[in-house]
Length: 289
Image (tube, rainbow, N blue to C red; front, side):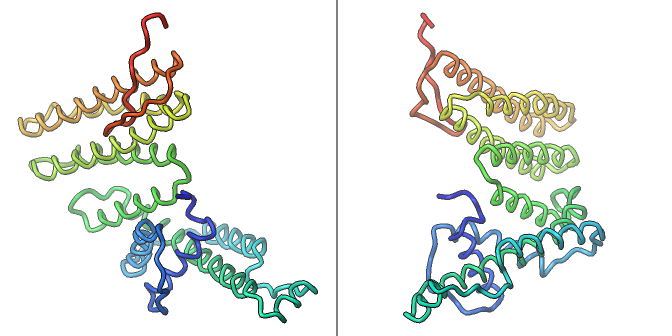
């Protein structure tokens, strides 16, 4: 599936879903992207309903308005369609093209409005929820914003790096929880899940392209994350220490997988066929290599 949110079909479908969510007429169609876009539509509704009480800087508003005006001019949104002999003839024959073009223009307009509203809202939410931890009123909004970032990511490498960033964020949240075994374990579960997803994306790209660049990002993540997770072993609660050791074991397994993939790429092995939760499982290099 095309991973670009603003590809033509996804943009048109996103505009339809936004219209339906705001009480517009239902479009009796389904798209393979509906499940992914549903999260963004829900986030848009939540942003509207729970708009945080924050001020948007005037410079940001001015810059955003200039960007939207420039985009509208470039896309021809709001401008009357130019009539040429060809388009006039098509219209006279009842061609379907003008209607389809108009729908695409409306879709682009809806996307621009959505981006404008989302950008303004997210700018405030980022400031208001950045330090939210489990149990805070804005924590759910913080996680929704993260899901929106993933949906907007343009490549598997970008998504993989985002997942690793979120794993770091979960670690910071876990460090603030004291005397809450269930909450501490739940946050580390989320941290490990983000770690696995990020590593799987990056190792898969590295194996497919025979390029260790994605593995470099994994190595950088492991260096800082191991040190920070090890700091949680200083806790007095033995249950929390045991749970922390599980996360450290995961990081050790990732380090071994990354090293094996790097060696397989270096000795020219083909991309592995088998994979697991951490991505491709490479074969060992022959001894003569």
